[in-house]
Image 1 (cartoon, rainbow, N blue to C red):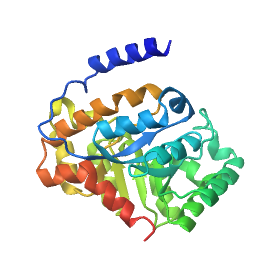
Image 2 (image 1 turned 30 degrees about the horizontal axis):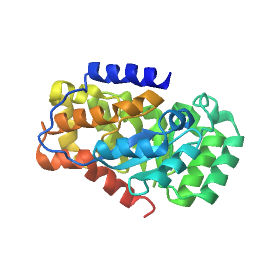
Image 3 (image 1 turned 45 degrees about the vertical axis):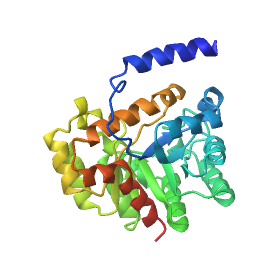
Length: 275
């Protein structure tokens, strides 16, 4: 059965818009949006997952999982690549309920006492969710431990995070799915806000960068980074093709800007965490 599933997934990859993209040079990448949850661990064991990342030329990856055991297993298999991030989810299906679940705090506190992380997230919180006690305590723990917040949030929630903790460092998952112009406005408002581009294929469709995205990349050359978002196990089989897709559209940008988005921005962001 597993061989059958892999065969279907392999066919899906061949039909993917990311597949078969030629790359003149294999730029190393920092993937800022990787998940390795319990079901992915079963389907793609840690050593295989580590090989997928290496074969894709992923130099570093910000990894979180539901539950955190997946992140720890992958970190053990590839400590040179994996940058651990603590997700507040212990199982799938908590993306909407965790903000009202006080037991989440005990879980976060326990994991922080046992393992080292660079971030908390990716977490889902929108608007006034940020004002809820559970989320406020999570932000306080990030502050106490000098951790980045990886937020899958709308612009209102991002504003509320910075109102709660003006010194926060926030990675905005999927750039909030906002327009390029709105993303630029948010980056102008918050100097410690970075944006990952996971699932934002419009910025590099067909291997070229549209004028509106090029403008915001050039206005904030140190604030964007790539991400695959392996939210489901089968997404692991797309990591290499997504890396090729990323390299293809990055070649449409000036070399320094391409390097920034490809890996340097994420590296600098993490160097700033805890300072």
